[in-house]
Each structure stands twice: as structure tokens, then as C-alpha cells.
Amino acid sequence: MELDMNEAQVRPWYREFWVWFFLSILGMGVVSGTSVLLIGINNAPQMVTGDYQPLGKVLVDTHERADRAADLGLGATLSVDGRLAELELRAHGLETLPDQLLLRFQHPTDAGRDVSAVARRVDVNRWQVEMGSIEPPERARVILSDLQQTWWLSGRFSGEVAGRIGLDPERL
Image 1: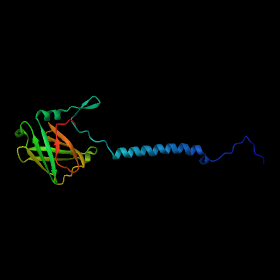
Image 2 (image 1 turned 30 degrees about the vertical axis):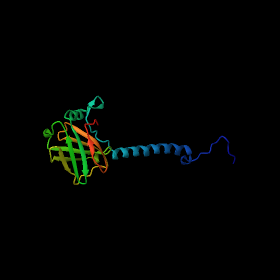
Image 3 (image 1 turned 60 degrees about the vertical axis):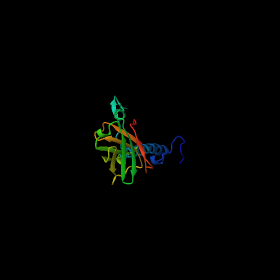
Image 4 (image 1 turned 90 degrees about the vertical axis):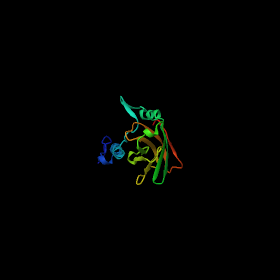
């Protein structure tokens, strides 16, 4: 029995290189798409916080709250000592400030780690916060405002406070 040179040998499909090459490309697409989906589900976008107003499809920082704090001549110093945080405020009219202020620690990337507390007046220019079970993040933006958030002061918190943190009408 003699083989004709024009007859090609037929191999089963699963022994062909190109079949597995194309299937592997499709498989990589499925794996990478599933990975992106899982990463997106587990790391949802954080809420934008700040003094922003929508302008078309972008957010524009209006600085309204910081400007209002500057108009009132507000400034503060925060010191955290163990479970007690103390705020010392400066303003044109300290007696007109409310007896309760909102103190927030905003984590730079994870909104789930943000914490808030209400500071109560103990003197003309001093407010205190019992931190109790509140554990501020090791790095955070500190925002002090009235309860209606018509003005705010901000500063940076970095773990244990060595000394005092200045809070100013900084534009976030």
C-alpha cells in the first residue's frame, strides 16, 4: 500500500496547536474580565466629600464654607490626649459660636473608616470631645464645623498627635 503525497494526514482537532492557542486567548479574556468585575464589586467608588457644586459633568470646589470661616475670623488648635480631644478656637465673636461643634476625621481613601464626634463647649474658647470608642484613622483630614456645616476648618491628622494640630479655613 503506497501513500499518495497529495493526501494530507488528518489529525484529531485536539492535537492541533492553533485550536489551543485561540482557546487560551479567549480564556485569558474570561479570566481578566472576571478579575476586573470582582475588583470593581469589592472596591466601590467612595463618596466625594467637600465643598463641591456640579457644573456640567464636573464638580467644582466652591470654597464657600472655607470663605465663611475666614469671614468669621475662625481658627482652631486641636490636641488629642488619649481619649480626650480638646479644641481651642479663635474668632471675631467667640460667644456667638454654637455650644456644639462637629469634629470629623476623614480617611484619605476609605470612607468606611471616617469617624465623627460632637464637641461640647467647656469654656468661652474651648470645646472637648470624649473620644471613648471612637478610633480615628492613623492618617486623616480633620474637619471642624458647626452642626449645620455652614463653615469649616481643616487640618491634617497623622496618627498620634505630637503637640497640637492647627485647623484653618483651608480650601480642601
